[in-house]
Length: 162
Image: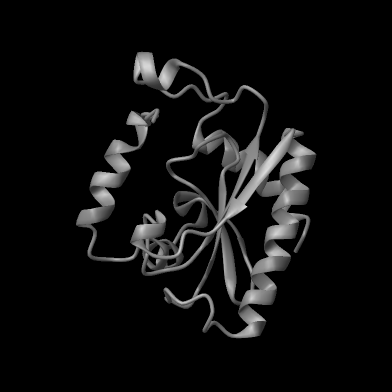
């Protein structure tokens, strides 16, 4: 069996296990969507940049209501979540022109959820060869832009959707 290392995520994983408060709930209560990296607020859900992205443009859609149970969520919330995922995909394709996208949810710690108590969906733009040797050999992940740059570039596109 081959093991693939992702050392750039160590800081995040170690910090998540110590967190007593929900990062999503904390973010939606902040006075500044810019500082929280929230790109869009719907009626039941919001779109936020992942602070520890796999690739530039890595987004998450999460409900305002704190819950670990996707299957028990109200239809109006889950339907809006799907609509926001579709909007995000459209915007990511428009801005980044990815060759593919990953979308998914990790429900529960054993399924890989970093934040298991507040379900959320990941949307990750992908390109052939976007994973390389740098994280393994150089213990570094190379991005074409900072989170602030990603936010500044994507925000106007999400604002057009309001």
